Image (tube, rainbow, N blue to C red; front, side, top):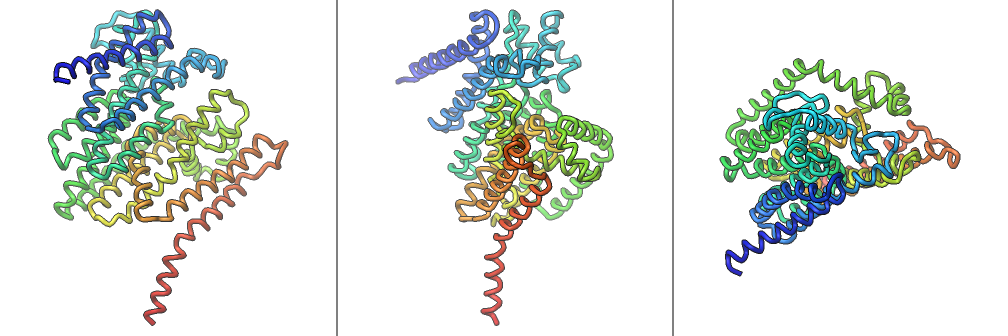
Length: 516
């Protein structure tokens, strides 16, 4: 096929894909079918072309194309299904669920955007300058107003926002896959990319008309820029700056975190190798920055933390009871650690008062996090064992950032089963990378520590399954005390952990014996 023939085939293919996707979106959305189809088609055509350009640039072939299609279809499909299933199988007393919204935040923000669109005459740029009651940063509200005013003035089709978010997440995948393949290895890239595609919380939050899919896609491109800056720093710097600027309207908090890891990455990869002075200067700058930030932002941080902890306590009677038992001085640490376990898999397995929709979604989300945790935490604590000094430093800096982000997410969300994972999943490219890196490292080195991490998680899930079962089905088995459960988990986990030191100690002892 000649060049013009390929262009025609490409155009026809993209048009058919856009038309079919638009028909599905319109069919499951409110309002007139043809008007909805035109609105979705107007978004599908340019963004489908962008996806194709990203795929072609990555050189990924059929596998990457399948990943991108799966990432897009899963997020759009979940969003459309949720929109239509929640009014039937959700909680009828929740007004947002009766309208198909997964989150109260999304419903309130969308309601405000629709009200502004239908009751006010605004110019194209005017929404950029106003403050919103239900959108702290304004980016999602502005995007919603533009979509409703120029594409969907006849009906409130928030599925168009879900459609756009699915495009963003899928568009970040070729950047993520390509840089992992080129800088590390194809196997790691394949595993990490599939984690990026299939991670349940990413699918769920992307189907909720929220900011997470936009931020995740932009951070995947930013990850590529950071990894390739040593090869072509000008091009990578432009992409990184563009990602940071695009993230800013969605969340200044996430943008600041992205800027922080970018600075740390550039410092450890470019400046530290030049001189040890850069190492100590950077450590001093980080310490000073943390101290200044704590002094300036401590009142706000305390207010946020106090509010989130208070919400967690009043929303859960047993959490309030346990916090009272551990003492006020440990309540923040307890809830932060508790937040890392969210969403708790044993809890959703045995939780009684719920609908079929929330039961399935809850198990789906919790199973995804608990499948990732042993590989992720094994990797984060194994970077010290990397032999290459430069790679070890880079991985260590990123591991510290990921651990810090997980902890901050838990602290900021107060152990909440929705807001906590919502913050955490935004940096999915980093989570997916370390998950894949941990699996590949353990397999390459035949390291049994990964098995121990998995066994420790099984102990946790097993004991807490028994505890939650006894909590909700006390008429079947005797109620198991919480602190006794924690004690048994600690003892069993300690024994499993200690087995990792038996062989090294025996080897060291035999070596001394042979020397004598």
